[in-house]
Length: 195
Image (tube, rainbow, N blue to C red; front, top):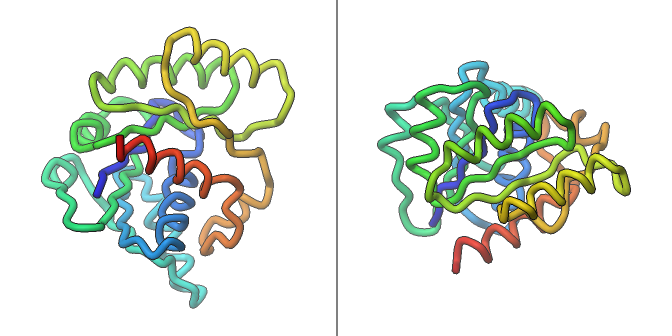
C-alpha cells in the first residue's frame, strides 16, 4: 500500500495533526499504518508519547525519521506509511517527496500560507499531489479565493476542508475520537491512489 507524505514549507499548517488524524482514520478501518516523524521538533512523536503516558496509546506506531531512513522506506502488503515533514526546506522534505506515492499539502486560507503552498507544490514534481485546506471557516472570502486560485492552477484539492475547531487542537497527546472530516479525506485519497 502507499506512502503518503504531508508537507508544506510553512509551519503551522496542520501537517502533524493531519498525519495523526489520517493514521487514526486508517487504523479505525483496520489498516496497518506507521507514521514517520520527519520533523526534528518531533511533534508526532511527542503526541504518541503523551497518549501512551496517559494510558491510551495511539492505534499505530510513530517512528522518528531522517532523510536517510525515509529514503529506505518501503511498504509491504496492506501497510500504509504516512510521513510528517518539517517546515522549511530540507533534505527530509526532498526524501519524503521522492519516497511518496502521493503528497498532501495542508494549507490554511491565508495569504502567507498560500504563497508557501505554491513553493511547496513546485518542489513536488511528478508525484501526485492534493491540497488539503485546513482551519476552514465556511463561507469566507479567503476560502473562496484559495479554492479559485487552486482551480486556476489545475491542482487537485480535497472536496472538503478541515474545519477550524478548538476540539481538534485539544486532541494533541490523545487518540482522536471524532475525525472532523479526515475520514472523508481518507476516502478521497484512497480513491485517488487506486486510480
